[in-house]
Amino acid sequence: MMGEHPPSCTCVECVNRRLGIVRERTKSKKKFRKESYRSKTRRNINWGRFGHSLWNKVKRLLILIALLASATIVVVTVCRFINNEIRLSSLIVCIGVGLLLVIWCLNSISKHRLSFSRTFLVVLISSVFAIFSYVYLDIRTFSDVKDAVKQALSTDTEQFRTSIDLVIQRTELKLVEISSTVKENVKEGVSELKNTENVYIGGAILVGADGHYITLKNNPDATNHSWEQLKTFLLRDKTDSILYDFDTFVCADFAERLHNNAEAEGIRAAFVSIWLGPCSYFPTSGGHALNAFETSDKGLVFIDCTGFISGVNADKTVDIKVGKDYIPMSIFSEPGWSDTWDSMGKVDEIETIQW
Image (cartoon, rainbow, N blue to C red; front, side, top):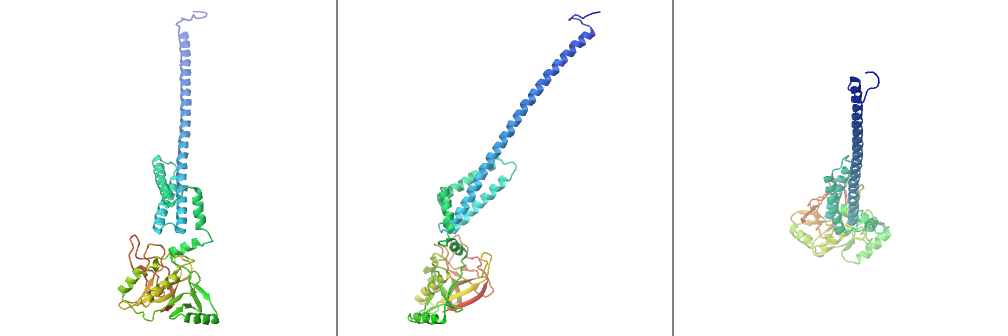
């Protein structure tokens, strides 16, 4: 047919042209739907990533808060112990739990994906630990933390040094260098007190924590007793219950008090001073004082009664030999305490055994 084809023409050319238009329209609709779907999916993915990232940040923030709280409690616990406000057992428990929490928090923060269950457990246990510190350690505000640290590290009272000496039971023996004239005057003054004498080490006189001369009061009627009788006296004597304090009462004071109390009860006693070498927790050599008793059945025994905390019996025996570790053994067992004490270093020298 020549000329223009009518719209209803059914020739091959017209039919193919009409089919091509339909295909193009179908392709356009599919393309539009596909692009619309991709755009919608992309928006959902972006919001999902943003929400996931935000939740991770919240979890890490909670872990960080738990970390700071646990570390702060550990620091305050140490300060409270230095200030003699808590017992050694409480210090060990608090530090143990606190350090475990700190390590757990650090390990959690380092993970790429932090699970909800892990975050929940860390925050829960840290909260319980914080409540405990609120009740037991009386940590309520930041000023409480500041005051505890300031008091513990104060140089006015030397509380920090006192507490360290209290734990390791090592302190320097205090000696006062004196001239021969002063020495004679001291002897004359002491001779006025019958059966009393001072302790001299290398030409110097031994003094207590507060500067007083260590004075031994001997009983001429004192005798050697049996080991059981000596233990009965030690259990009754309360010298070991005195609180150790670097400024008022150290090992020389403990040994002086026990010597004089034993002599007063008719038990012959000796004052002993030794020199200890460095050990793992005390980097320098230092002096130490204790007592000796000649028993009728066990022979010579050395007794260290230096206490370090109220309410704990600190009477100990120790085998003293030059070159051997100074390891005290408790005479009377205490619940929750080991009978074997830590080594205080090797015995370098036995300076004096003065009866």
